[in-house]
Length: 367
Ligand SMILES: Cc1ncc(COP(=O)(O)O)c(C=O)c1O
Figure 1 (tube, rainbow, N blue to C red):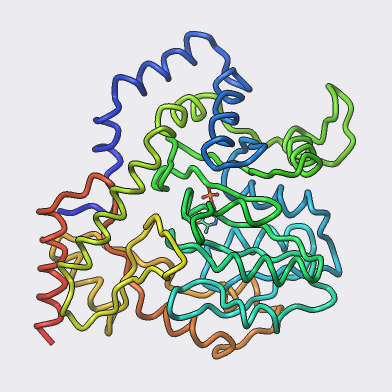
Figure 2: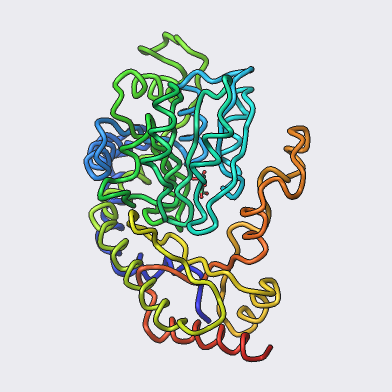
């Protein structure tokens, strides 16, 4: 069986360090806001090239806090893509603002900057590009469009830490950058975790305050906030893993390249990296005919492929009131029926990749 990700393989390679980090936290009983949290925030900010990083409870919370920090509310609109994980959109809804979608560029699966330009309205207060699958969104164009109109940019980097656009890291383009440390992410902890990064001192202060019950000092609540903190145990685990992130991303890129060689010649569409992009392959997403049949065939063959995601957010029942219809975003809607995420993780072996490629070839040949 080829798992979709293999978290045990990664743990085994780091076991001594991780076990020691966990034991230290337990030994110190510094479970909440222990020293590992501040240390990780400093190290993570340096790794992603931001002035500030604030550890929070999840990627979902990172988005919620970022949108709230920008003061979006009823009457405002925020634009994102329909092929994202739903948390991106919930962040807009939870402050009472209206989510607006733009279609993706079918070549990259990312926000189509031309369509973004047409979707902006006088009510648009923020744009949330999502670096889907680990491939960056076209941030040069998106930020140029937004800056010209005074629209804020919140980057959803849950799937793409350290990806680059023209040699510049994602997260350094927008006003705020939101990260998820969900266990299977490129940098994953052993539960939920997330971070908001920014160069803006005032926004950093607001996010930190909102995440800490809205406190500006102990027992003084200046804003209606939340309790959203990165757990000390998770921070300690993340400190062990962070120095490996760049190497793991390179291992993912090498495996993407190898998949490309093994799958060349099959009538399936392989992921392509735009000439301006450096992707970090959180997911390796191919497009196939008869996707559901193919997925079932692979699983029967022991290849645990997945689909990210089988439905578009604008057509989810919870968003019926927004009034979108099938056909509104043809590129995203066409892709959702064809996309298939193959097993991808830094420890994936040559033999495992061959098994995946052989199973896909067998499906295609079977007709
Ligand atoms: C694009 C995207 N945004 C947001 C999230 C939410 O992150 P979390 O699961 O840490 O809440 C995820 C991952 O689940 C994601 O893939």
